[in-house]
Amino acid sequence: MTSKPMQTSQDSQNQMPDAETNSVNVDTNLSKAPLTSRLTIDSLIDAQVDFMQQWLHKQAEPLSMEAWRWFGAQPLSNYITCDHLQHLMKDWLLNQPMTDVMRKDIRDILHTIIYHPVNDNVPLSELVDDTQIQTLANYIGSHEQQRNVLIHTLVGNETFADLLTQTLYHAINDFMETTLDKAGGVGKLMKLGRSSFEKATNRNLDEKLQTYLHRNIKDLTRKAEANAQAHLSNQEVARLMVMGWDRIKDQPISELQTYLSDEPNNSSIDHIEAGIQQSYNRLRLSPYLHSLVSASIDTWYANHQSDTIATIAASLHINEEAMAQCSSALLPIVYDAIETPWLTAHIRDMLEAFYAQPTIKEGLALNHD
Image 1 (cartoon, helix red, strand yellow):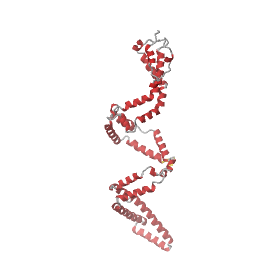
Image 2 (cartoon, one colour):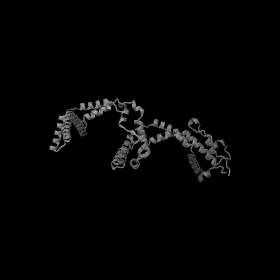
Image 3 (cartoon, helix red, strand yellow):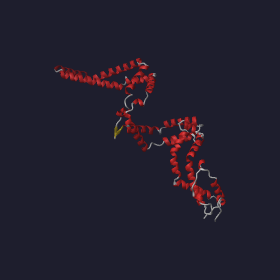
Image 4 (cartoon, one colour):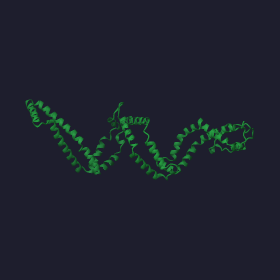
């Protein structure tokens, strides 16, 4: 059945805004064809699909900014609850192990950073400022407990005492052996006396010497530690720390590489990353960490549930200017998506469903041929 051209279609074309008002000057089948009996629902849908795609293409940028302004004005609590955040953090993030791909990326990035050539020309002071070291030194020096721990680590360490004992023992033993060998008959006599002493006391002279040194050196280190804790002032402890930093701060960052191994089968980075992963995988499933995460989310949500999305975004330095830059960066993706066959098919399905409605079909006088 044929029909007369739609007056509403003609009116729509006559009322189309020009380019200066952000309109779209569409070159479609509908605009080309005269409004005669050749106009069908299919041709109208084709024209509308083309029009919508071109209109969206030109309006994508202002629409994205208007969408951000609207979204930013909405209160957080309208769309996100505390339970949503708990589910996101605990049931999704913490319950999922880090993928092998991500772990490899972390290792590769760490290797690039640590072994980058720029580290050869940048001093350690670029990483840590002198004022930070001074602040830390003043803090440790002004807290008796922390100061005593530091002094004990430096002076009263038992491992250091054991190492010193072994060093002195080997020095004395080497001296005695060398001296006795050069003493001729006297040396032989002294060795005989040593043998007789060990038989009479049923004790090895070397063992006795080590015991004597160990006992006395430990006693000396305890006295030195007590003396240091009694006489090293807060200022002196802070000064020692600052002096230690001054000795190394001008060394290049690449100096840290000397403490690492970069062998294929013995990579320090691989060991560090594996150790971190082991700790993370143990903690992420522990009730302890889940309790802390829950408490942290409750605290954050209580502080911000009445804030707008824009207010929360602003705390992360995300404002309208940042969103405009983000929108510009994403526009090529939007443009490509608008022109994809799948979007065209969805728009066509939507329009076909619209014109298939009985009330619409009855109200239209279009050619169905």
